[in-house]
Length: 166
Image (cartoon, rainbow, N blue to C red):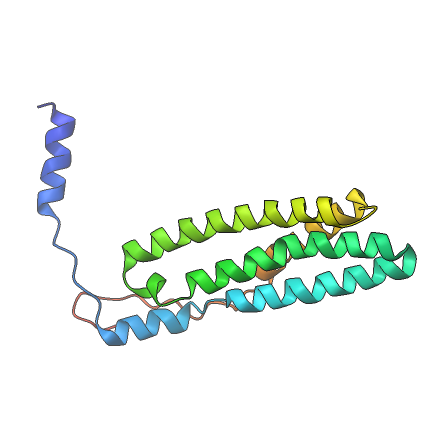
């Protein structure tokens, strides 16, 4: 064994085992780090898609507005399915189920996005690809807005092994 490996092993052996968090510490961490509901993101995406389609209808024509709405739908519908999947009972069962649920619903999201775009191509007469792309991109940008307007984290508390915080 090399000296670097023996030092790493010795370092690991000298560390104290991790102490589980108390209920009070868990509540403090959750209060200091509020999460943003995925349903709020989907709602804002849908609202922005409707506003964009209406704007495009006023400026251009009905075909362009329907195309933009299809682009927005290609983001909102999969996003809603994803939000339903990751907030469901199965995803909250344990950490492994949450990770598996995330990847499963992300895959479903991609499939539904492609399916909606293909359906628009097949069923919308005179589809305006540029308007559909605009609807898709503008609606996708809501994720960046969600990050920008995420609830601010509270004061970070230092947790000690005996369950007290500062």
